[in-house]
Length: 493
Image (cartoon, helix red, strand yellow):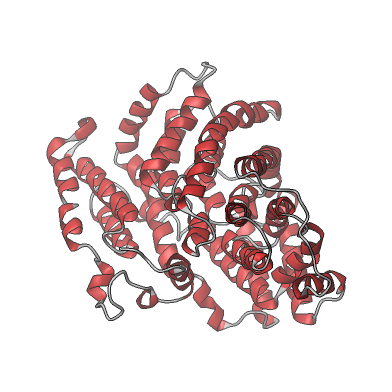
């Protein structure tokens, strides 16, 4: 069935801002709640063959309980990927099985809500709301837009510059790409740009958000913190910058070059009529130096939070505490209100709780140890020059099959940490896998940020696949022969 233009972005925005009953269904609008919970009941029933088969087959020499849990994990991963049941149903089923079967205790099943990451991510959602409501993000973009909006290639370049700048203040890629893409689409609406080139420019907004999110630990509060948490590691914002800033700048530059070369993006200047309202508006925005009080308050709180995060190693205040304090100030100054609490999406938090529990439960039930043996046999010796290249290809293969970035991370990182113990520090394993996963996508489902643009019709599947084919070569080479050597250079391994 062909879905209407804009379907995916409506799903995403409603999913992040309201209760489940508001999510558009695939079927008629009056479909019942059961249809939304289990849109494909036959597939859902058939999926129970996975835990049953695993229980009977006892793979990897596991005991009955561990075999059953491995089958449950396979069932839920398929459900998350294929969508034959609502994601919340699959997550609750996984957590219930993890809690009732096997050796894992409550602290292992509920590792995410009991951690500082829960507070940090919830606070980041509210911070993003405050910045969006105040208009600060829009002003930041428009102040610089007139400098770059002179050619298609200039717009592609600005995608990466603005993505890096906004990542300092907005710890979520969703608001960043929505602000930029809407501005781009409006600006190019009446420009004589070939359709292929127009799609490439708009694609650059979403591609840029993936690379620039890795520059700083706060660039993507969900995935960046997930990479560390799943690896059982912790890094200050300063240490993250040492490990990731230079390599991320490199892969960002490679992404820019790939888009410009692949889609032959022109550097010829746009003709700008003297009465162009958008150009005049951008110029006026660039000339307005003073901020209204609402924007000034949010800007001051955000800047103070960025400083607190970057200096965490000096004062010792955890990032979650700093974020919670910033949100409290925003509430006290009425920059956000109680109605904005709906931005903290309970469905996403439930999904994160399920995803974060996987590594702990697999380890508690002895499954991780058996899976680690498989990975060790798949990887060459740690002294081999192709060690990191093989690891990158393995992670890419998992991501291609599983689809979701976070699902792939929740499966790959804990297993790789154990399989590489003694050869690579755990935090580097998490960052390595994360870097490969976030930069590799062939389909919109491989990265939810890219899915926003695809769902809105800004670019086509063939554009993603074409760039994905190029990045499938670039990313493993970058990870093996740039990322890993950089870590050796800075003494991290």
